[in-house]
Length: 256
Image (cartoon, rainbow, N blue to C red):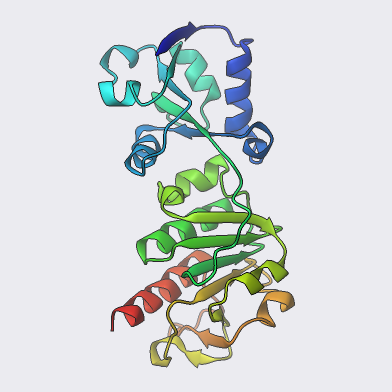
């Protein structure tokens, strides 16, 4: 294991970290993901993933747990001000990992799946990934126009769910034909009420654009449309909230 201390903003590695932290799609170009903070790093290690580089702030370095240090073949120690400059957090974390990233291009068949159809808010996307993992879904397929799944905002909102899921992104709607499980969609005004419906398992749930909902190409593949009871009378639910309700309903149905 090699250990390098860096204090210069102009260091090539520092510049790369800054790009990974600030540019949402940079992981696709560089082939690495920046995991900032002990929660995300611990989640990756729990799933058996090995970082390429472990990064620590200078003040935290003397007390960094041995297992976090030894997880990577290379360690970089950054001046605190430099780590704060790279950080995308209001309160910068004190450590992070650079994790190798390779795009998954194969849509798995026959597994419980969540389809994201142009869901653009990173917080919503991360929340949906978290619900998918919690409720037993194994795959998320993001169509073109959806927020970058491995961007910093989505990673933070996902709280480690990424590492439990098979993630495929930036595909066209015709890729959904590979799912080979029933595709379900939601609507605010039509379809059977979800709490009165018989839900198939395994299945795929399609969650659509915040303003436009599921597009025609995806809706044409659906075998069932359901709606969520809203006795309070709101016009619609946030897509993250709707996804949590639908995925939980499927999880409960699968246990019966």
